[in-house]
Length: 578
Image (cartoon, rainbow, N blue to C red):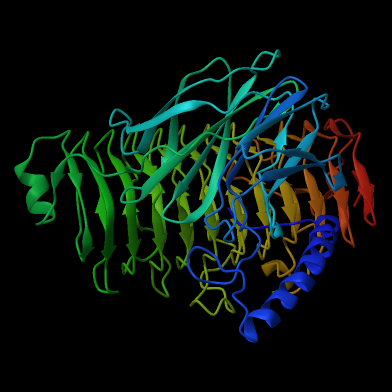
């Protein structure tokens, strides 16, 4: 534990040291002129003790127990006592001086209050530097013990762990939750909260090939207690058949085989139904091979922890060609730099596909696409960015935004995109089109896309809620790459779509706000902008419009388009007559 002393404590210790060092200097002068002098056991000059080691504090109900171990050096003189100084935030409380022991308790503390304890050692030469405990919240539960982790191989394609622990004392208030902190290979830890009661949880979203450690903390009405000691390291690894020959291995095995892939390969793979292809491998098309993974007619395939890059696919195909599949899972993939000047997508989804995590970026047309009939798919926790550029300087669009391009475009029913980041695509961020009914766009962060952030076109019953939508539409293709004429370039735009709910979104800095457009559209059902419920959104300028309009003379009376409860700042609101 690093040494740390608050400024006020530093002045206290410096004052003590100053007096002691005056005496030490005098003694050193005597030694220099031949006196016997004062020496430590090692022969070095005597000094104050080093800081105590391993200072910990354990919360109780209005009490805390402080423990430590002896300093690594006593300064050449036996330690006679320790001084323990508590801090409540930055406020110094009364110190306690104890004998040559290694623990003490403080009573009469306030629950729900964070305390830190500084411990210093004293010998005949003076008091040494202090070492601090980690902060604790008094009244919170004691740290759990016995934390263990094992890999869970029952989750298809997932690097998943089962973490067990034993809860400590709750200090008088029932434990409400447990916080599991995960660290891997020196990367900053991430935390997840799980409700009590629990003594084991499944932690998902890990990556094969990394070593993970887990700590557990419990929380009650007073707050979160200190974390446990870390579990032993768990190496997350694929359990299955090693793939060395690519498609030859798949052809030789029955369907439903788990394959473990490592290394870099220029392969095109066509898995059988039920197969799992698990990395960490790189499939690199070297700008010559067209497809990385194909699977029309197959079901329940799992792709996990793979990197797919540099495949020479062109519109309307994808490097991972999932169209015509059912129930595929795309877990923690990196899919990037696929396509040509003729377009090309990172991945296409089929019926009931699931995209869990991963990143889809720098593809020359779309990050992810889903064609007609590819219903019921889900994207969750993914990042989809910088697609539809001619190259990675991100200066020029590749494919016209009047066709299909950008982050995600789909013409499928019952698709859900949630808790994902969709940003900096050279077209629309999220684009549902041509009777893509019952779309759910929930709790996403959508920003920096050149065209509309969220675009619902000729579709019915979309639900758009809880999204943060920022800085979209500023290079809209309808405005020749700068600005957004009429009502284009909205953070959220409903184009000839009906029965949409747009609620509880936060929009700022978009070219326009929440807009609706009506044009003559014969390619959808019914192609009418009507029955829109737009409520309780926050829409902030600096400019642009919020409202609906038509370029074909439509009278919106009776269309049941309602704006209510919205907060609109630095923005033109024109309701149904933009």
